[in-house]
Image (cartoon, rainbow, N blue to C red; front, side, top):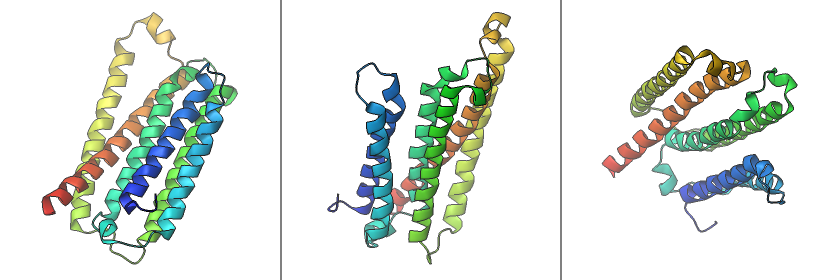
Amino acid sequence: MLHLSPRSQLIACLLLAGLGLALFFGGDYRDLGLPLGWVGSVLFVAATWFCVDALHRIPHSDDEAAIAHGEWQAWVGVAFVGAVIASSLLNADVFQSQVPIGRNPEASAVGKHIGTLFVAWLVLAWVLKQRWAGKVLADERDTRIELVASQWGRFATTFCVIGIAVLLGFSDTERLREFSYPFIAQMLLFALLWGLWFDQLMTALLYWRDRRATA
């Protein structure tokens, strides 16, 4: 990957990390007799730390400077929040048990996996910020994009919350009994994650559209 542009290297790392996450979260539930979960965790950790190392070593270039710091951060956010949402959906059934999450080993394991994702995201975000140290990270354009994207994010969260409210309000009694409190908590958390992901996606797309318009 040394011959790729900085953006291409970051995208390649994220794709490798995504493959690792897919194996990490899905490997334990497949009857293939292979340690896919272990392989996925190795791929994810390797991809994450390669990103960190590459971002430290890669010299600044015109290609990198053409992409705003906010856009870099937004694309990374899209990848990691998307992975968290995918993990939550794939493992939603473990929260259906009528027991607290702290007493549910499977739910606790999923929570730890999601926590690992957030830590990796924070590490990469911090490295990107350090790489851009001493430069102007935000101007009027960034403020405008952030405002528009946050509005879309709020709309997405509101839409999801209304959907949950309608589901709970109009379901019959037998259906409601299938929803445990941990499962309802996960639905509310999903609404927040969906809004955050939509915010990050709109931020990245607005930066991309603005960059295409000025090219």
